[in-house]
Length: 414
Image (cartoon, rainbow, N blue to C red):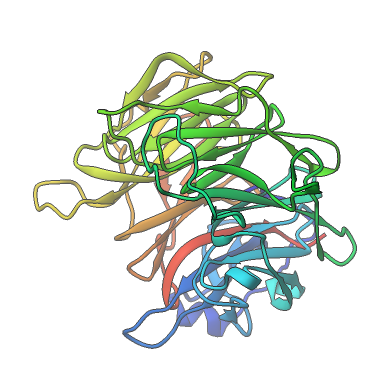
């Protein structure tokens, strides 16, 4: 999730909102906005909402945005992105395959206003990413429109599963509206496709600096799709690559980039896989290939590279054993060759709320936040020299609504 926007500081804070969150005084002005996506929570009926917060520049403190929470524009919001400039936010509602992408405009003080919803071409939407310039949106579906035949697999896993697909949208810079980009490289019965096929049961995708969309498939493969003119995606001879062959079993739970490097977390083996991405889209293992997670007996669910691309953090869910650590963040330093080494400080790993889901950095590059399924957000101050995550001065735990899934973060609207 890219961060954008700067603009003026809002030199005021809401006393009532501060009191509601357990805080009592104004800070140094608003540096940006944090929106927490929330699924349905049976306990109190809340959910399918977006809770919004203003980020205090001096303390990283969160105060509620007026009229928050907002509707998610659908059901089961799982992730979102913000267009550079901060005027538009897009939320992926996994429970609404026909109208899965909800567009919001961002008003004063981070207030979200629903505009309209757009449907991806396939079924079971799970992920999306936005181009660096904010011109194109890429939506990943687990089931492509063509489900008449099973998807071929380079590993032989999931032999009966359908292929997934990526839908490409062009983003109007003035209205934020989405327009389908037709695939001009693949035809079916003489007609160009409206999507690009991937491997079976995909779960994640990521845009890379080398100009590729890398998709993680469910059969221990990745699909690299080259980004061309007009946001077009092209399948080439090197598009499908095997991560591991049976009997090794991987469960890839996250994908992130750090400069020219790409990292995957494998929850089945509690490790991080390290790659470079060549100019042809091929993933090549970094020397050493894989690194054991710093924390044992956990499930890594998210990876995040800081704004300097020199630090990598792994978000870990506790596996529930009384002898294993609680949910945490593992901190690593990215060496010049892309290899990871654990950060050498006595605070690492760092504790977070229960059931963490994702992690973001604020626009001023000072604060880091995680969303947690226990209904909280955890905040830290990040030291980009040492990589240390330090507790916030006014408390690092903030209450959200519903059951948090992922986070969206932005600077002041410009």
